[in-house]
Image (cartoon, rainbow, N blue to C red; front, side):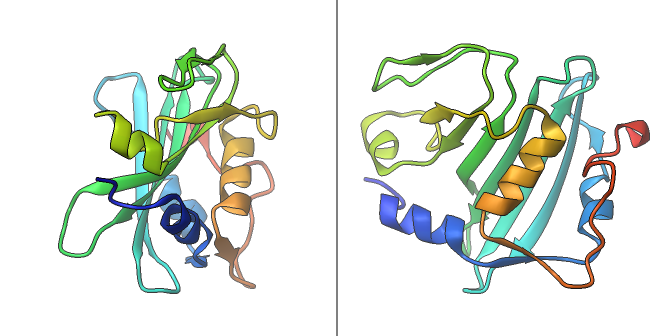
Length: 169
């Protein structure tokens, strides 16, 4: 049985989430990931419906096409993250198991679906579609913020040279 229906998933993605004024500083607080080539950062944000969301950004320091930006929801009284969206780079192929189509070395956006939750014992956001709306981590983050229900506060200073400061990692 699915944790969320497609309608509930869309509602969660579109729920208004105000980015804190120090968002750029906080997402640039990268730590080494599971291996020495990976950097990871995360931040939790409350939505307007009082849901707790988590943004996770991961990138490879050697292969700039190898990155992911994840939007997940942390269910109340649980510590497991349910991944709603994942924006991936173009460093690998991805095959949608149920549909059988392959995305070959293109940027692609994963989205949780009711069907993948019910029919397969794999990640809820395994379904993906290719995109031309971004081509690197910074443009992916811009697209992610635009399409993920995020609100930038009026006094938020947006970065002039991109969201992610690679020199700090």
